[in-house]
Image (cartoon, rainbow, N blue to C red):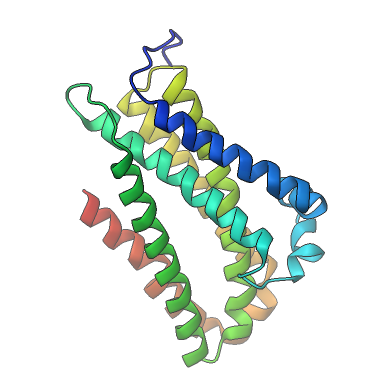
Length: 217
């Protein structure tokens, strides 16, 4: 990593976006202190799932706030692709972030409700319900991690292509580990509908990301 301070271009609008993320984080922590604390401790304990995590309604205020924060953080990280892939330095435009953010929300929302529908059709709702909630929770935590990394590279340190994709690879690995952890935690329920769950994983957990990768690359 190159530790020299980088020249900050006209990215003041990005600073406002990060300010908005910080405000949302502050509000979430202020109004849901216990649940937020348990959520942040997910890497070391699953207390969030065993206590507050039992309230698994997606449209709860806490889950909505965390989802907005997650999508903004991941979108800011994805916007860095333009910086690392462009042959010359170009000023980032707010509309690019908006397009990425809206596209990401549509992708995640469509995938989530499609998964719920398929689970209902295959009669494995009990198997998928806990898995979906835990997967989304881990994804939100990884989103916060990527948001912090993005803040450093937008305003502090230079970012090389190799470093960017290394961090992206680490995030993908953390996501994979979280999936395995969730499957192990719910293995007794999953084994009751193991065959259908495997079909579900292949069709809705693996295939969409392979297709998305092919589209982007």
